[in-house]
Length: 332
Ligand code: ATP
Image (cartoon, rainbow, N blue to C red):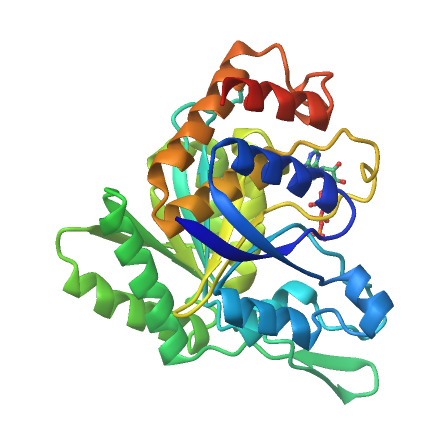
């Protein structure tokens, strides 16, 4: 089958890691026609906004985007490119599978969890105002419909991927109304899924337990800010930001992207780890139903990692982005 997919290469290390992922997708024999679009710094330079209308229109046409990390200029009043994309396309669920990789030794074994993050509202609604001079307020917006949608996504994901347990993460003891509403909705969905184990945990308690015993967690569902922080924390358990893929999924569209940012310190040096981008490509193939090609890429990546001779600096090696890419392609 051939696919038409929007490609956003992104800023900083974006073009390098996405370039690697595209070569690998190609070597796996998936026929994709790319519709190139821009977002982030490049879009600000050209159009004066982080996500131009043309980019949104491209994704509305293709329904799926493969995206690198993008930069939003800070403190200049620009809307975050990622938040803007997620809101304009109603990508309400963000999914990040975090698991130990072969050959990469970390302090923890048997980590295999999924962070499901509400993507469209919460503290990232972008609604901030000055109350009086010297005092600002940031609105945490929680709607019943978005809580319901993210809960549904988490339980569906759990069932469809043979997982067994969903943990809802909150701080309802303090934010009684907002996180209270979140829990209320998730509990309704838990009741309808009696064969999936369900429990709840405060965000502070989860943070400690994740660092001490991450292997006991399965699917974690939470609001926007908590999910942002926990995704990065969890990636640290299995090798860092360079190895964790991500997907933003809504009813009509899906955008696949690595968890990491544009890493300006590494940009242009050819040293970035392309693994997160490559594995995001695998998530995209699975979403498209191309399971065989996804498995082929995953197997090739695992072989290179297990072998241990070729790995990038963030994983303790000395290889370049290109050397790592070539090793995977050779196996494919
Ligand atoms: P953003 O604000 O855009 O989310 P961030 O502050 O989370 O970005 P990142 O750019 O994601 O920061 O990364 C932080 C650091 O982690 C980088 O400066 C880099 O040193 C390292 N890093 C991130 N991604 C990679 C990668 N793919 N390969 C190697 N190192 C990486």
